[in-house]
Length: 114
Length: 112
Figure (cartoon, rainbow over the protein chains, first blue to last red):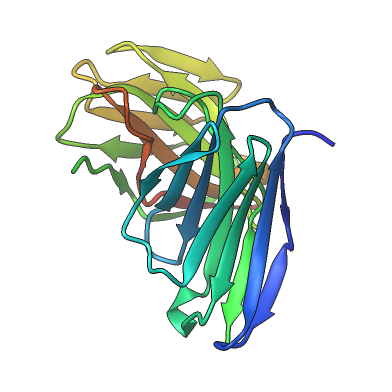
């Protein structure tokens, strides 16, 4: 398998549930990202990992918890979410975390919080 | 905070027409990228422009980076239904040490 994969593609969860989103990149990149994409808003950068170290956390609520066990895998753990957290969650990777590098995106997880 | 404004937000045209979408900022960027996102998928890079005044062509798509590296345009000639999607521009800061800044995108619908 090549590129960036994400699972699951669709997720419906209640506000009291705990779930995790998974991202895997097969490109040998050093940086990985989580983005939130909502209607009528630009892509919101949530977290950046560089060489498995979290280097950016853009004021994301603690109900979102990222984990990067190695340079190929990235998780987003979700708990006690709110309906406004419903969105498309995109994972991306790039050669390096500096902005000039192309970002390769996964297909996203469409999350619905009920 | 660097912002990228994209216009128009929505565009619906007939197949065969030409169109231009814009990406503007008051900030200077070291480079600018254009992505296309199709429904149910993540964005895919179309092109990166680096030099002020640069023009790049990708089949029927022409990308231009402004002389001052603050703005960019994407022109599509003879649009096809396969061009339908969300077009995102993303800028790289001149400081070089921060992630890309994305615009809100232009949602293009090409009707047969």
